[in-house]
Image (cartoon, rainbow over all chains, first blue to last red; front, side):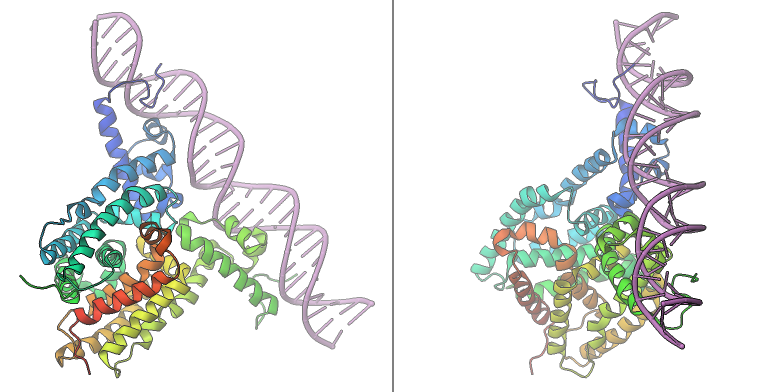
Length: 214
Length: 214
DNA sequence: GGATAATTTGACCGATTGGTAAACATTACA
DNA sequence: TGTAATGTTTACCAATCGGTCAAATTATCC
């Protein structure tokens, strides 16, 4: 008889890896739509295609599952900002940051919604990460932008609000997808809307920032 | 013995108005944070300061309560877009639309979050309103913007994505408030952040749109 | 003030919630 | 191949869920 939940073992079984993957995938489906409190273990178990006790064998509690999911997703989610390069050309850096964020919204909408749900609820599970690692990363990148502004490479503007506006405009296409589709109508709801959005947003930001062309 | 739920009476009692107001206020508190499924009647009743059966005397079901709340808030929420004036000067119209939306985010963050929650969940309760009244209103305003672009008053750009970007950037300060505060730190988390945001966003949009000054 | 309608409450219901216990089945490994 | 560890399932639990009911209380109006 094992002390279960894979606590006794030193390294993880093949089955453990597979099943945990399966569970987190299902959990992402459910949590991203209904938020933490609105999601049920039964529902996640059903999506994952396993029984509830079986799921609870891998994650002791609903919170543990959510925690694991957040931890895994958080790193990936910040990748574009991490890639934001101080040494690069301001215009192309901002353009490609917008592109990357928009690609994330297109390719990982569930991840975007998972965080959006957390934010709406006041970030009860990730507030530390916001005040710690996230703030540090943003502070660092804001400093870069501030330097660009100071040296006249881009217009003087608040770098924090600039970052917020890139986040919000791009993530909007994931978080408010249903609204975007409804407003655009069937004709323009295809995948082409991301290309349209990219064109519009790049123009908005670049011209808006009066970036000096090289 | 009354056939309850105020169905028999022709006009509403003073008590009915007061209590329904009280309930919707509490419902807004709860639904805006936890979404529909994540909210419980008990919790709303507690916030409203009344017993659960008493609350259910005024709204037969959780859905009825949510419905009533959505209906009331939807009208107010679209007011700024309705006020968007075709006859006005493009620059000042866009500026004041941004201002108004930002004021809404500041003064009615719960309403913003209520809708955001609905959107994240795929708009199960308001999809009709999105495809109907909302789309119509946006279509109308988009036509105005398109005309501005055609006549060279503003840069050529997709009017729908322009509207999306104003929505997302302004509502971000309500929906992602906790993140904004965390990133800005204590020093810049005061109410002044809305003024900073307004300044930044107006500059972003006006210059970005190459609006011809009058 | 009394009748009548409107409001409020406590006790309760079946379904669902997050989670457990233990028997059972499977896998890995010597 | 045997056996110990790992994985899965059935049956179950107490708490909470949305919602009902009838009795008790309060407001309204003649």
